[in-house]
Length: 395
Image 1 (cartoon, one colour):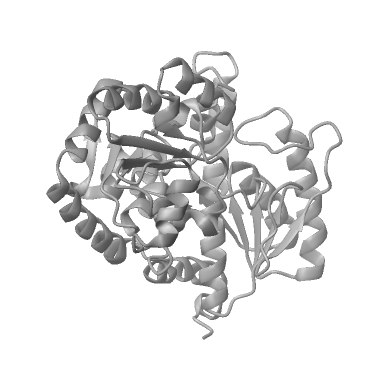
Image 2 (cartoon, helix red, strand yellow):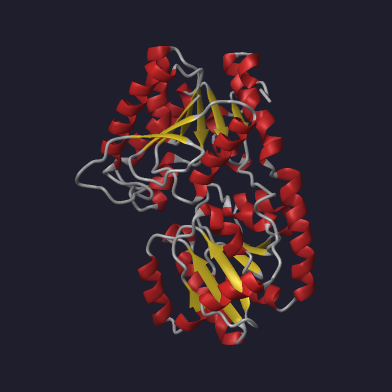
């Protein structure tokens, strides 16, 4: 199959992890997967990645909405169109709205079935990134385009049940199914606090006795990073033994400056971008995890990594947080710095509650969010379009 990814795969966050883990589970089951993506991104040795040409005026990495993506998407269409006659894929699997639009054209030209992996709202993401004004004159156009792409896609997979519910204009249609973000619980698991753990803590200047609140993901306003730092200031005022590790990219310098202005620079470590394969080692430093994401239309795959690691987790109260964490989440009022700080303090104050949540969260991840268990739904989706052979486990 040909996966079309309208992003700079691989980039160690969110939707990229979903693309990678879907490709891995399909390969594990004996299917051949080629990923067609933008010019930028990190190559992975086990994946067949085909990239577009670069555009000379924008060679750096792109996160989120950008006017330059129109050029990227034109090149992505041309690259994918060049691959179809040579690869002869049985199915197109599109990640993102731009990829779904490209996939729709290619599907019609070559009569190849299409699956749209819808990982969030097109207009929702554009608003989150301040690229689109929901009250502006062009909002209606983008919303109509989003709904048209949804309408013409033969099969749609959403990353959360909440995302499927937001598509109420197609309520009850069997072509829409929820394939939740999942986690490899063999890789993301608790690790011993041994000498290697101590070396990492010392290398990052974190005193051994400090309790670590950890965040790993994109650093951006819609991810709640501003709220997290203001909450960290409140926590640090009340606990001398609290330390924050805020790992990820982009905008690291901006948030380092903000930490200095808040007077907590010595209590916050910014490791920068963390390769996906190093994420379990970094997360093992945490005593408590935090997920202050504000977006109400996107998934939140980091929550599953936290759960699999056995990290008690504080998150803003959103439908996705409730869906993933269930009754085990510690939820703060969305966008409320003070409540976020208080929920973190409550967990830091209660070692027994942390231990109980740790065990139960990991068990929830194993039972409900394993890629092995989700593979059947993915294969059923393929079989509905291509016939039972293409939905089979080949190994």
